[in-house]
Image 1 (cartoon, helix red, strand yellow):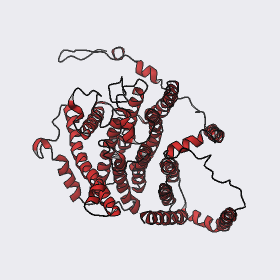
Image 2 (cartoon, rainbow over the protein chains, first blue to last red):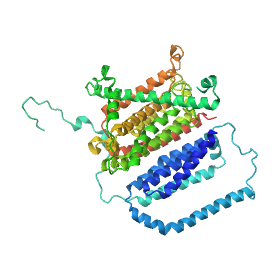
Image 3 (cartoon, chains in turn cyan, green):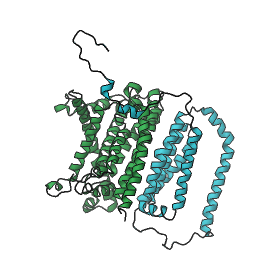
Image 4 (tube, each protein chain N blue to C red):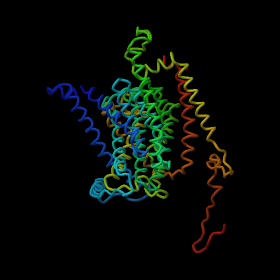
Length: 206
Length: 350
């Protein structure tokens, strides 16, 4: 019973906040609704028993990706009127894309239910250790059966990161005084300061 | 606790619900009290280090100072700037406070004394503590004022930078413990150091990790020397500048609850949590309840936090970023490789 209530709560909240992402007038509000949508998706993951993925969803998407979104959107100087004007112009295109996605979804689920794709029968030979925790099961599959795909994904991300840095990196035009932290730390207080004990009424000569 | 309520003749659903609510209150209310007292401790420690007296007027030894302050802010007027984004402005302190409390759900206070004994406890803490940046960022943006906005930008960049290295440090601990469950992580530290000390910190490979974790937790909770988000000399009071009354107090409470959480994480991950310090049965300290050890160790780390606050000058922002990205990140990554290599070589996983 509680599961059913929780499922509908998360699902309704998620769809509602997804709608709000699109319709919100302020882009910062949009990002905040997006965060709520991510969060509810994590709740749904917990409900199906995938707590590891749920936590990763929160850590990666809510904790890092959405923060960067928020960071960028907050820094932007956005003209709301212009944004509204673009909405009417781009609406047909968006609608077409949405329809294509819907059609693909219907087609995919329809084909799956028609049973035309041979997805194999679960014989249990690929099943990971029963009773192992979520984390252990994912690890067992990820680092054995899907090792190549996993490593390839990591490599692609690395290349993408290097590419982004190379594209945006500008060498400094003027050479500023560069700090050598090691040199600063090695500095001896005795060599840098002078202790004087002047008698009262007399100044200090440096 | 569910079993207790079931023995009173309730069915499982009801007794589970009541037991969970009772557990939440049992954690949240003492935590609020602890936050009030720990603020007093904090001020007393700084005062002692600065050769001052500190709060000594309200109640015996000034013990009731925090409650007087709490009453004061409670009776103040809540001012919302007219240019502020009202909804988000009010939501920000609530989020900070709620998130700071939510993380305590998985902290084991004693053997098995934990509200939610979940398998991914450590990841849950990482997830929830990564949420705490939203309170700050939302407050800074919604205030619609320059200083809070600068502060929010600094906070976002700072917390993301240090979370990366904290993640790698946690991986090192998890490699040794073999689980994300905090209760089991504590249990796996039994007699770990030289066969007698119940702590991970006395392992030669994990000791540098603990030092880095301690410094990162200072940065993560925006304590001195990394309190650039609230640097008084530059940003007035940072993201809290426009806040008053209870909305300000919620930030304050949330911040200290987070600091206590980081202290308890230091305890749980590196200093044996609720286990007694030594794994020797000669002294009858196994009879002392685990929660006493846990609280003592957490208090010790809190003392270290205030000690650092009273003695270390503030970092410059570029130095902060340098430390996070150029020192901690490569070092923690190196140690993940080193530790997993060492564990493979010594047959820890087989």
